[in-house]
View 1: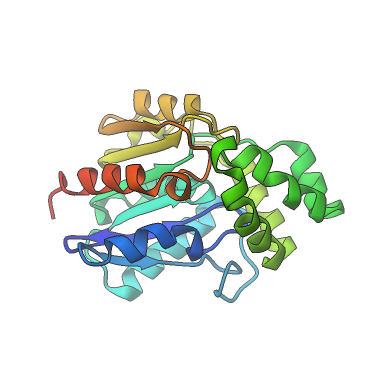
View 2: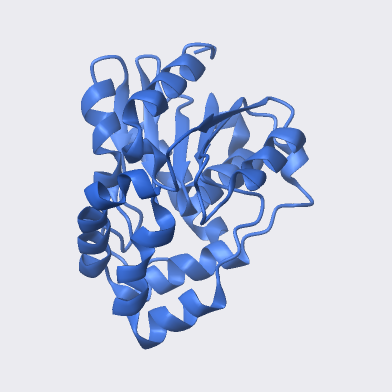
Length: 239
């Protein structure tokens, strides 16, 4: 999350954690108050996770309240993008803005991924870099991604993927009134740019930034371009 010195909350891919944002919270901390959170059951947070995006959004609302954050900017990647969209719909009055990274009004998950996470998780985990990261950045990031997913609770990861698959705000997305930045890698195969283009068309105050030579993990693949887009957006917001 970002505030004015803005606080920004970040949420990431199913099975991911705050370390996916290391290129943001270390660099931006001097300009903003940054809060990178681990969702329940993910990373260093206790719990068993959730299987509905709405439940995670309620948890985020409580976290914002407990931390005493004043109208933060919520930033979410993948599952986190669904959470911030849901939060904007339900709790928009408490936010200054939202940033979705590799998100969509629907976030369908390949049935092979869901079945694999309950059958042979290692096969799914080791295949993720091939379709989650641009070829240019794959060698650099594949170890980080695989190791992170191997550490994660597999039932929580399955529940997170299931939450993404169940997410559907197609009929409500045009009701979002919070200023919105949509960031997507041009090479994103998990949530191709067309999903972000749809959001830009439907959300009245949305702006889309497509980053070349980057896939689903755009905030790590091209941190410089990502951070410039993020700072430019936050600087336009009222406190």
